[in-house]
Length: 452
Image (cartoon, rainbow, N blue to C red):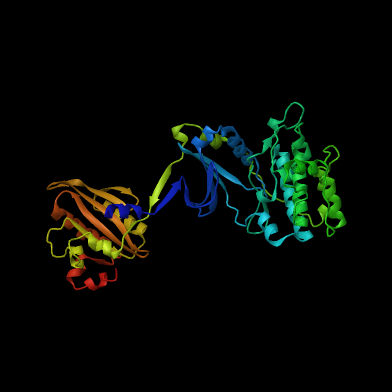
C-alpha cells in the first residue's frame, strides 16, 4: 500500500531531445499541443505531438508530411515558425513558435468590430504574409480568424497549414481541384468544384476576414448550407453604413464571385485604402531550408529517432509516512541512533533535489565509486573490493515539502562497517548540503526534525 502511494505521488517531467514538455494547451483526434522549454536556451516553444499509429490507421501520413514541409518553406514574421521536426518510434514532434496573444477571433468575439485603422493594420499583415506564401508556391486554403494568432506585440501569425497546397499539386489546367476550407470563408469557385486558382481563393478568404474585422460579423451566414453557398456564389452581402468608401470599395472588389475579374493580391497592395500607413515586413530569410528532419521523423531509422526521457521529481512523502517506515512512532527510531552497526542512514536537506543528487555523485566519485543514476535514485559501487566484496550503496531523495528533502542511503551489498566509514566521509564532503543528520540526534538536536 505504501509503495503504491509513493509511486502514485511521483511527479514526472517528460523530455524529448532538448525540450522539457509542459502543460497541454490543445488537443485533437490525432495530436495534442504542449508548451515546452528548450533546456539549452530557456526559450519556450509549442510542440505538436502526433500519434504515428493513428496517422497510419487513417492514412494521413502524406497529408501531415505535406503540412510540415509547407511550414518549413515559410519563414515570415507573420507566419507561425516551424523550428524542427523529430520522431520517436511512436510519435512525431513538431516544434513550433509559441504564440502567446491568442486568436484574432477572440478579440472580435469579445469586443465586436474593430476600428478601421486597427482592422487595416491586421489586414496589411495578413496580405503581406499571404503574398509571401504564394511567392513560395504555398496556398493556405483555410484562412479565417480562428487561424490568425497574435503575438505579445499584437502582430498576426498565420497558423494551421493542414489544408494547404503547394504548386506541385496544381493540375495540367493550372488549377487546384480539392474542395476544402471553412464554408463561411470559402470562395465560390471552390464550391463549384471545377478547379480554382489557389491565390485568388486565398484572397477571397482574406476579403471575408477584412469584412468581419470591420463589421463584427460574417458577410455570408445561413444555417442551411445550400442557402449559404447560394449567397456566396451570388456575393449576396451588404457592407454596414460605417464602412468608409475606400474600405467598401476594396471589400467589394475582393468579394467578386468571378475569379477572372476579382482583384489580385498585387493589386490589393496598390489600393489607396490598403496603402495608408502600410509598412511591409522587413526580415532576413535563412539561406537554405532542409527537409531531412521531416523525412527522418517519419522514417524507421533507429539512428535518427529522438530520445524520449522521463525526468522524475523526488517521491513525495509526509512526516507520518516517514515515521511509518520504521518500527514505532519515535523519531529516534527513524534515525536509528542507538544502533552501532547501521545498514542504512538518512539526512535532511533544504537544498534543491537536483543539487543534492549531483553533490552526492561528485563526492562519491572522488571516493572511488562508480555511479548509476536515474532521476532521484542512485546506486554507488566502490571500484575496490572490501572485506565482503565491493560496497554498494543505494540512495534516494524524498520530498517532504517544496524546500525540505530527506535523503536515504542503504547498504545494498558489502561490509556494514565499510558502509559506516563511507557515510561519515561522505557527510563531511556534504556538510553544506546536510541540514540535520542522524549524528545530530545524539547531540540533542532531535527537536529540529520535529519541524517535519
